Length: 242
Image (cartoon, rainbow, N blue to C red; front, side, top):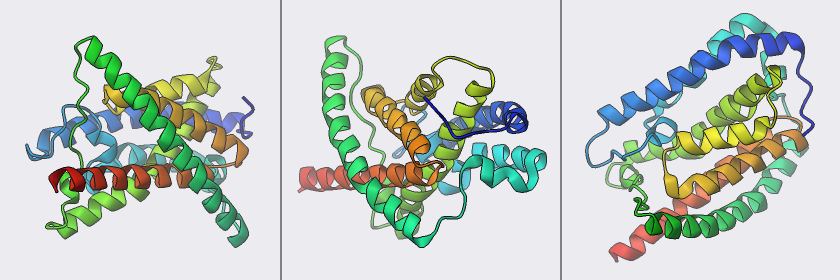
């Protein structure tokens, strides 16, 4: 896979910044899982990427602090978050919608197959109810959760995974970096039934980073995917409760 050109100096700071950021992300997830109310806690590390807004950016904060110190003004050019023209934003924004919808449809099919396989092997396939904290009766928490899932998670995860993790592996010349990133991205969410979907999502997002020559397109796709998935879960829950 051809990737956006990253200089050797950029690879140097990525090698030093990404490992502590990954450790901080995992530890942040453990902390979130420990302090979450019992009614919201899921038996997984999904909360490290979809938890409360103040704790969600631990890994990203560590990564950007170390990166800014090492790279300075060239940081955002390396990351691929250059300023886009209005036309560029609109074109990538609307390109992201059908791609995200396609990933969701494929993901639903793959998740159903995965659930069947997990049931055959006697493993838990029940998805945790992660949208209780989007309760309209708690508007502040619901708004924070919605913003985290739809906006903050796509931005932070694309910087950490599609850029940081991928370029870290590239810098060490590890074969198949997109596959390793996809595997880590899927497993770190902690939901067995969703592993195929998340792995597929990661591969599409990595390709979008290459085709879009930066992170804006994968961020838009990721955001719309999370939006569609959230609305689907909320509608399904409303129908079941009705």
